[in-house]
Length: 366
Image 1 (cartoon, helix red, strand yellow):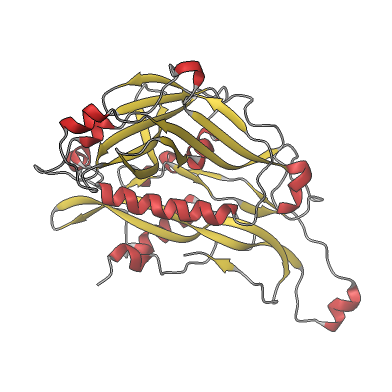
Image 2: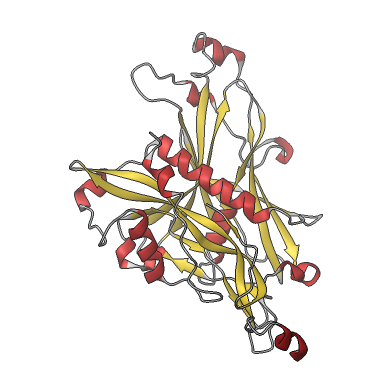
């Protein structure tokens, strides 16, 4: 039998409307339908304090997140030049590092972020250190590296959001790449003046238990103190200039939407942390870019309208959509556990003009 979260991902739900913005109530209704619930559950606060998201659940969530980002950038051209931002380690422990990136004025005006990549240089492990750990099997010689976005709230508390995760071998060295596009998207939604972008990098065992290897402690990444700046943490920001690529379908963020605006896709951020029903229930993500289709479409000549009377006015609608992966808390058999779900058609990927009554080729992503 397939895991239940995969079965949920096969449901198909309609968008809010041809060009209507997604609301919190519609998102809640979709989530309740996916989980086959009639009302919002109220998780026990004590259970939530003790709840730990297992590695395999994190891996499922990251896999769906990567798939969503891969579909998002398909067909796009990266800019020939990208901006590198050197990061510094604000704090460092044996297996956890906090990277800080100054981001203000790093993203060019009138541009669209296509991808953000974190590059960390894994230092080679000295042979003497490997010898002290004895003979390591291929599985025990691996460690899991996890990247999370860290936000400091107004009350001083911290909130981390899982961004990417991958396995590395202690026998390897060189640059390791992580997709942190979602973290930069989150950062862009913060109120100005925005604080620096903070990424928490942790190195953990791949497997737990009494027989688990401690080889993960051998994984080290170069910090700002690397000789001559070699191996410093780097954040690559790949952007598109909307003056050249405005035909991609995204609205100009600097121009207000008016009656004369041509059909385009406009950013719309849904903040789940601001919705009471999501508190202690939705564990990831803290919010997401849903987008919406706005603007007008050029109408056909009156002669064509007479020829095809069954076609209504052309409207700006969502022609391509993507799913939204989530981690929610589920109570089964008296215990609370995290569960991965995927809500189809939650993010608008592309807007097109179509007549009411005409068939529109839509690419709906599970």
